[in-house]
Every structure is written in structure tokens, then in C-alpha cells.
Image: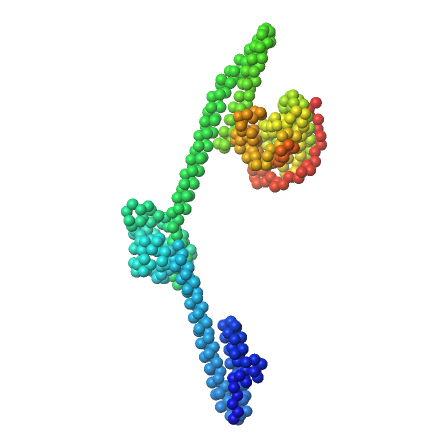
Length: 479
């Protein structure tokens, strides 16, 4: 009988040498190798069955030979599968061991009865006991009885309810004088009811930070309340002497007009009265801002004519604008007639915006007031040709007492409360104040207010974006 080598068989079947076939086999994944062995076993068994039957003529002999060959291939497949599974389990175990050994958190495994079966090395730094001690003696090796009962109750609840449990535990250090630490225990059941895994983490720093932030917030709120109370008290105390100053200055002015004397006396009387009016205006602003910050300022909603409020605000400011030769253009949309809100608050907002525009617009400039409806809201815009505001200051406008020019040498007067009051009143209407400005080109302050403030309280929100081409018609309100 002629002997046939493996090299010859390999070349006849695959067209390659046996070494090349083994190299390709090594590159194939284990799962693919197992599938290939199963297919190869079936093919070899079929070939053996046919070959032996052809040579011997005995079907029994051929079947036994084919079965034996298939059994050998099956055993090889099982061994390869076993080695693949063992290797994967070892790699998975090593990976989990690497995580457990290097994690700062303590990882503990509990069996179905709550007993500890594994503890990571972090137990030495977190609880001050070795992992082996924790496995033998349980949590009692590192905690007091009360702390152990809390932890065990959480673990048993996790095992019984099959749900994740999280608790915070204060750990008193074994050595006297050491600070108390706070640990977070998170317990999660394992699939199949095979115990649970608990993770302990030191959250002492986080607790202290949260406590410090809460204390700081409480101190800040207390200081804010004290400031508001102080401003309100001082403002009320200022009102009494200011009323006397204003009253007597008016009385003196009338007497001087009736019996003319020294012109300087009349000038001094006028200065006293104007200064008192300025102080009284500041007192009113202080009272308003203190009420807004304290949440005590409320609005009285009622239907009113927007046109009448705009007319009143512009006519009030007209003398100041005329003294600087500033033109005021008013454009009102025909559809914007009536709205529901606080009429006094709207006039105050327009007065503050128009006053600022007049203050920061040089002589000969122009102020434009536009009002038109946009959806369920009224959009009122005050645009000026003033000095403008730098972009880094725009975001802070509206903070109480904030001024773009806060130096002692500033040329324009004001306490920085006007826009803060506007923001507060807009917020009470559930509206929004938008500011656009370019240095040297002027500014535009836009009020977005609901047409019905009562409906807005029920859930109607202001539009996110207001179109720039709001249509309005010019209206002559000031001669």
C-alpha cells in the first residue's frame, strides 16, 4: 500500500502546505475554529464511511471507522471549547480583579444570607481593616453596632426586594480624636438571586462642601434680607424730613414770588426743592427695589389703554428731552389697544427706559418708542442714538446699583436702580427685558409683556424670539 504524507494530503485538498494551513488556522478566532471542527468532523466521517465501505464492503466496519473518527474530532472540539471558555473566564476574572484591586471604592460581595464572601483591598484604607478580616468578621470589624445594623438592614432589603438600595453611614474612626467620616453604601442584587454587590465610597468631602454651600447660601440670604430691611427702614426715615423740606421750600418759593426780594434767595429755594425732589425719587426707587428683592411687591392687574400709558410717559419726559433738543418719535400699532396688567408698573417701566435714553443721548439726538403686538404679547421698544454700552457691561445691566461708569468722576447722575426696577416689574408680569447696544451707535431696550398678565400666570410663556420688523404706525403724541 502506498504511503501518503500529510503534506501531500494538504496540497491535494487545499492547494497549500500544511505549515501554511496551520498558520491560517492560528489566525482564525476560537469560535470559528470550533465551527470549522464540527464541519470538518462531519466531512471526515462521511469520507471515511464511503472509503472504508468501498474498500472492505462491510457497512458495519465503515460505520465504526466513521464513528470513531467523528468521536475523535468531537473530543478535539470539546477540548478546544473548554480551553477557550477557561481562557475567557480567566481574562474576565483578571479584569475584574484589576478593577477591584485598584479602585478607591470598597467593593464587597454578599451571599444570599448577607454574609461577606469577598472584599476588595480598599477596605484597608476606607475602613482600616484587611479584606480577610472583613470576610471573617463582617462589618462589625470596622463599625459600631448601630452602623452595622443599618448597613445589614439595607443589604437584606436589597436581597429581599431585588432592588438597588443607597444609604449614607457616618463612621466613627476607631482611634480617638479622628474626625467622623461619611460613607455612601450602594447595594445592588446579582442576577439569578446569587447574593448582592455593595460599593462603599467616602463622601465626607462632598458632604462638607454641600454643608458649606448651604451655610453660605443661608448667610447670603440673611444678608440680603438684612440689606432690604435696612434700605426700607432708612427710606421710610428719609421720607419724613424730605416731605418737610419739599413742603417748606414750596412755601418759601410762593412767598418770594409774592414779595420779590433778593434773586439769590429764589435760586437757593429752587435748588433746595429740586434736590429734595431728587432725593425723594431715589427714596421711592430704594423702596421699590427693596420690595422686589424681598418678594413683597405685587402688581394689580386691570384692563387699561396702552396708548394712554405711552402718552402719559412721553408727555412727562418731554420737558427734559426738549431741554436737550432731543426728538421723541412714537410708533404705535393700531392692533395694540388694550392689555391687562399693572398700569402704574408699565408707566414706571417706560419712564425709567425713556429717562435713561434721554440721559445718555447727547443734545440733538433722537429717541424712538415703538409698541406692537406679537402673538399673545406686547412688544415695547425704546431705541436711542446715545453713547451705547460695551458688550461686557450689557449682561450686568439690571443688577441693583450697577453702573457702567462707577467712578467718582462720572458725568451722569443716577444710582443704578432704574433698570433693576424695570427687570423686577417685568418679572412680576412674567415678561422679559432684552437689551441690544453698540458703543457709539446707541441702545435698544425691549419690553416683552403679556397682553393678559392673568393668563400668563396660567402658563402662557413669552416668545423666545421677537421679530425685528415689528410693524407700527407713527402717532403724534407730543407737539
